Amino acid sequence: MAAPVPIAHDVASLRAQLSAWRAAGETIVLVPTMGALHAGHVSLVHAGKSHGTKIVMSIFVNPTQFAPTEDLSTYPRSLEADVAKFTEAGGDLVFVPSVDVMYPQGFATTISLAGPATVGLEDRFRPTHFAGVATVVAKLFNQCRPDAAVFGEKDYQQLKVLTCLARDLDFETKIVAAPIMREADGLALSSRNVYLSAEERLHAPALYRALTKCAEAIKTRQPVEAALEEARIAIAGAGFAIDYVEARHAETLASLDQLAGAPVRLLAAARIGKTRLIDNIAV
Ligand code: PAF
Image (tube, rainbow, N blue to C red):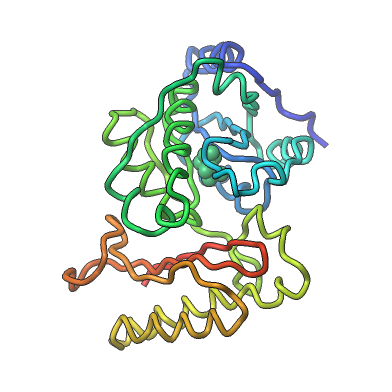
């Protein structure tokens, strides 16, 4: 087994290594994560390899993107296993800052968002979430100055928010989108899937099945609202409490009311037991 990749715990040692690589002509790709790596994260590392020569993964469970009622304290943490998986995937350096490194005493700045961050999807149920995500990602971009950064389409609204952030604030980092990885039965891979009981795990793929059926119906020109309603009934019937099941413009996430011919994305969030799952597919 290969020796584990080095870990930087502070910004100075991260920058020292990155500067040495840049001086040697390497290009840097950042894969930001909160750890608890699964095959979806590994696919982000592989996707990153087409966009640079050195892959850096950040592992930081970012407190500012969790509401007080959410799972910050129980979020799965598995640093040793994560470093082994990243090493195996051919990564080069892990950045694991502490909360004090990222948010030192007196930290007082938050990025204010509009556009795709305020379209009434995740933001309706997690109103402070994207400000926390955008602030930590902006810090990571400044700390690493990566040529590219890879984000999964699983968090589709997050991907659009961060694409907008990079464009609006003139980050030189290219945002790379990587497709969702799924279990054989269709369930989207997520670090939070470990929360599912055996019974809930059996029912969980109903979310993806309903979205797939809905996308097919829309493609065959069934009215969008009727197809969505059928999906909501199927998802609720599998035991989920629905937060939203919606069809949106695939780029802006705007409502589709007056956008005939626009590229469409179906997005859903629903809770089964104590676990909140999100998923999305292209139409
Ligand atoms: O998608 C995630 O894991 C997180 O939201 C991110 C982008 C690493 C920011 O904490």
